[in-house]
Amino acid sequence: MEILVAASAVLVVVVVLIVVLLVRRSGPGRDGPGPGGPERSTGDGRADERVGRAESSIASGTAVLDVPPTSPGGLGARVRRLLGSAPTHDEWRELEGVLIRADVGARAAADLVARVKARFDSGSDPARLLRDEIVSLLGPASELGLSDARPAIVIVVGVNGAGKSTTIGKLAARLHGTGKRVMLANSDTFRAAAGEQLGIWAQRAGVQIVAQERGADPGSVAFDAVSSANAKGCDVLIIDTAGRLHTKTPLMDELGKVRRVTEKAAAQTGGSIDEILLVLDAQTGQNGIAQARAFTEAVDVTGVVLTKMDGSARGGIVLVVREELGVPVKLVGVGESIDDLETFDPSAFADRLLESDA
Image (tube, rainbow, N blue to C red):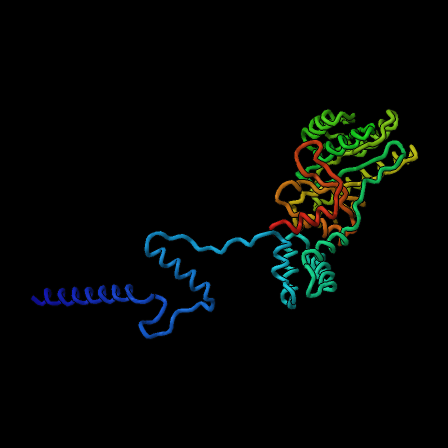
């Protein structure tokens, strides 16, 4: 009998607890007080309204997430919204952050913000000012500096996967299309099938190629190529080099050797190296500045070719390379076709950067 009484008491307690919970769930709000208490507030009336609509839709079984729409426009539109007519110190600082997230780099971002701030007044268009300062920082378009001496010599360097062989093929086709006799030299004797790949590009571009067996000394290949190009009356010699990580000191030293040997061979014909082009992937981001610095120190890079600019890459690394190393971007790859290599246009680049969704 005592057991039945105890069980009944426990059952009553359980029922009471269930009733209390049900009453609380049907009340004015789980996160707020009962009737007569202050209303729940997030500090933002619009936010409260969105929360209320979301909770109602959940309760009705027709929940739709009320996510604020993506801000229209690209980087330029965002700059206009951020600065307005009387930007504060914090808003100028935020502009630096926006530019850094667009791969511009801290130093270049600070420089650009200082330039824009110095010219800004209440009637200014901040996006237009920023565009003008980007163009000013980049300087005028820089063409390839090929001499009239035969052969003019171009060495192409870069890390694996940046698009070096593709760039060489496009450059060869571009020069061949202007009536120049072009020869390619494969001093990338380390990578398997490098010679075959460059040979395909030579065939597509309609130019000659010099190559040796895999494992041959890269410097010897370059030396022989200069002699061959001179003997065959070629106008331009483009020398491919093995892709290498900029952090590998022995490989970078070998690249320096290729440059020195090529200079020696060119001097024998009264010529010199006209361009040393660094191929950079536009999607590399800030790692690109480390690559550019290492290659510049090893072989005195004279210009940059920015590849893969046909996708979503913003290419802000262009400003970092120009600002910190003083190396101009001379060419950009904008597609997969052999004709998709263009002279770098600072104005077009600035427009693209401001249109990007940074």
